[in-house]
Length: 154
Image 1 (tube, rainbow, N blue to C red):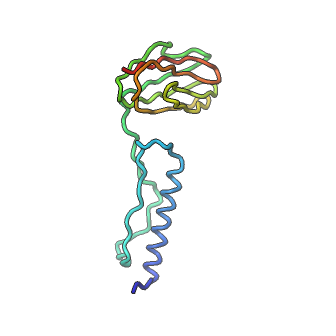
Image 2 (cartoon, rainbow, N blue to C red):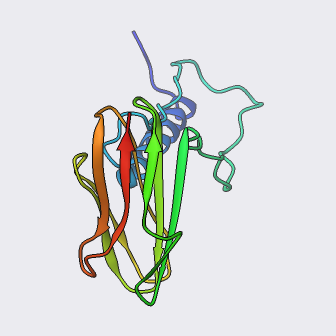
Image 3 (cartoon, rainbow, N blue to C red):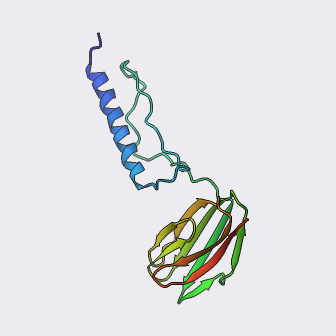
């Protein structure tokens, strides 16, 4: 028979708090399966030892996103694209990250992969995907209708 003592109730409440915090932190992520979701730590039924302390108020560092095989950075200012529009070639299977900073609010779109990102004015927006389809794909903005570059996947 399992009896709950005040110490085990504290452990259960602490575990519930940690699980709630982890679930709330996961709400801001995309549905990208490449992003790892942290799991709750295992808890035991034994009362905590005297060495157990309350959780620290500082958050532990979150795991960073995997490094992209190819990172493409574009800036838009007064409808001018930097670097100038052209073709960017990547190998099939590479992890591609496109980061765009625009001086006006807009939306980034990668044709053929149906990926996009909001571009708040002056704030970088990124899209990341595995280049698993070969071909020529336009990367553009929707509001200003600017072709940023053509992505060639070989």
